[in-house]
Length: 249
Image 1 (cartoon, rainbow, N blue to C red):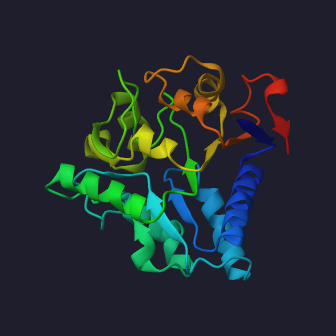
Image 2 (image 1 turned 60 degrees about the horizontal axis):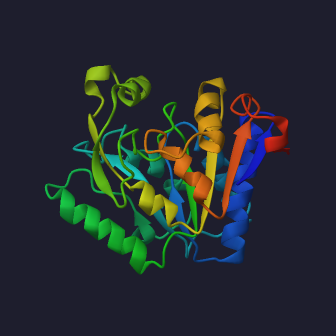
Image 3 (image 1 turned 180 degrees about the horizontal axis):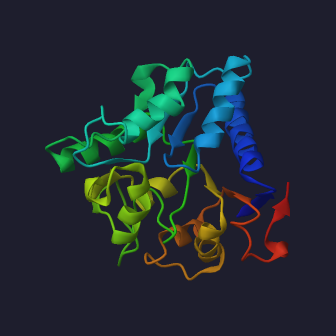
């Protein structure tokens, strides 16, 4: 596990975008696993700027998003479909046929999850998976639980996650209580993983990811076993790590 610590959010976002740029430069038809939430917004902004400058071409890139709320229409401004369009896809030359996001409106959860897993497999697997991390160390919407989930599945969101996401909705009552998410097993299959975290509020989750006991009660702890993972943090998110754990960039 490599850990890179940047001075602030902006530098973290630039570094993350550079990693994605390098991946696409080496493999123009890369399969990217993408995340939503406030953390990757800066990375997406940098990627859009790179595209506008002619530095990167997304025409052959394939993407799979980690998750989507259950029974929230894609037209909702809080859906992850909407988020991805607004923050990335509307501003680059990606082929819409190459964009994959779970269908949260499905009436057949099992079929949707199986179809999503098969689509990832048919694309050759994910080359690099972008992750954020929740305060309770959830990745995707894999909440602390008694076992690691292998594949894409429907999950009940914990009260802490619902509360954390309430800031994006008119009230906490409007926050969906369920989501479709890639499982920890799906995430772990990615050839490379890049986790982003910023702010003091993520310091405990980062520490437990790096040094905690490997347990489904700390979902991100399983990443200790992955052979190619980089954590890109700001100084506050890294504040509980020992300086010997990371490299300043």
